Picture (cartoon, rainbow, N blue to C red):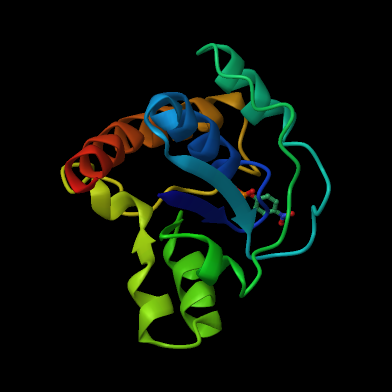
Length: 152
Ligand code: 4NP
């Protein structure tokens, strides 16, 4: 099973979702990757603030490099999680057929109890915004991990 996490820049939110879910699933054969819908940061490491908050939780995401989502990712991945509705809309616009569309999920839909229905973009926030986003992504990744275990 291959999972792809997608945000806009692939430097703040989806690298966290990638690192956190990977830390929970690598023991049982799930592959996790991330990408951005935009091209602004291709080749860059995650934002230093995302690296820092992940490190506070013993998760090292510093080796990740940003890449842009490709239509071929629909062939490569089984489930594709969008961090917000704008990302989801952009991905839907790239879907070639109903099979591609069926792979798309809104990330926060896996945590219906959360007061958040999207992962807010922390890019223009201070480190506290990144801490909030980390907590949100961590809780939702726990739920996704349970969903995946139930499904395989
Ligand atoms: P991300 O955050 O989508 O969580 O990686 C952003 C990073 C960069 C930009 C926007 C959002 N930007 O406009 O450059």
